[in-house]
Length: 446
Image (cartoon, rainbow, N blue to C red; front, top):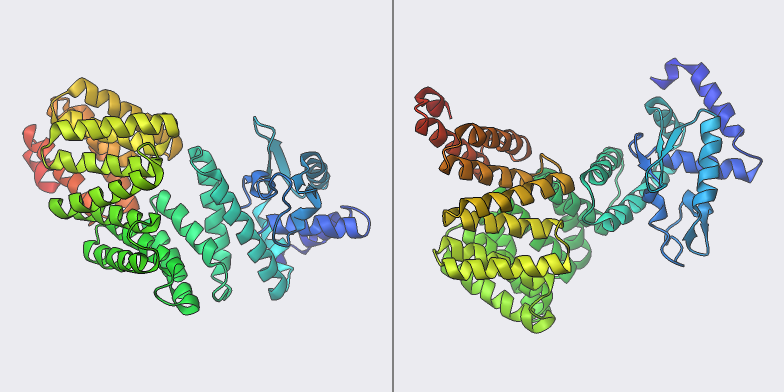
């Protein structure tokens, strides 16, 4: 496509030469070439500035090191370079509210910058982009939905570039980071691809029983739980648990986390006694290691609450949920996704007790927070939308219930597929709603 417009290529080549004198022009050419390996829209300064910790220079070779001084990011020096590039019509930029610079390249310029490189240079820039994105995704944590969307766009772009190269067994840690990010975004198929690639590399390098290999096995097991692939999940989690017990002992954090994950699986399978045994093992170990108010301890407290709801042990369930919610609000804040998950679970409990006003209050809090943090189409957001549909159906608010169910159904079909248990559960809920309304034809369709 670029070859059809040689006049553009000539103009861009001249603009690159005008970036500076001698080595300065070469340095800035490498900078804008690195930009071309990310999604051309919304290339945020944080992609690079977060790599330079306080007094710590970036630990891998990168063109962006020219903007570091004594391990600190020099925003003004970066801004001067970007202004020069904009004056030469090579990019556009704007400032966010916090002063961060956001860059956009034309897609044709981005493609041209990549295609003018030989294969070896393309690989060098691609691996540098991978390293920057890996550190960026680790640093953003529980951020707003827009920031995560931008990270997702960059990851998709970089991964399309990866498919053209054989990276061998390099970047296994990056694969785990990317897989975890896709998992958090509800993109389970992409997460599975990343985890399986990491697992193959780790088994080859370190063997099947290495603790790093087992970390990937555990992550795959938890992913399979969320995909409803219970047999695969149990196989992976039991393998991880046995390996951790052998390598670390029964009270190590990795062992306890995997015991907790097995409890989650057993709840989904209706194996409540097995689940309680695993949860209590994990809880006792975590309380001993970290104390009763650690966030990992509270995760297991929350899970026990869910189990007790299923067992009809209502007083125990409420006690666990309130303990988890209060602890997470203090440790993580009221808007953290983990806090919101517990608020959602408390809503489920209140709904089961016909405490409808309390349930709606918790659901609305959880839904608004998840929409802001994760986005409207994330599976966790959709879980709460479905729960609100159940509540509204119980209250006879059929229009509200149908709106929530349809929203959840469309999202689940897109994220998980039409045959996933969560999708089928929504279909069943809609069918029951239509039947209650006497809309038998609609009920039969669902």
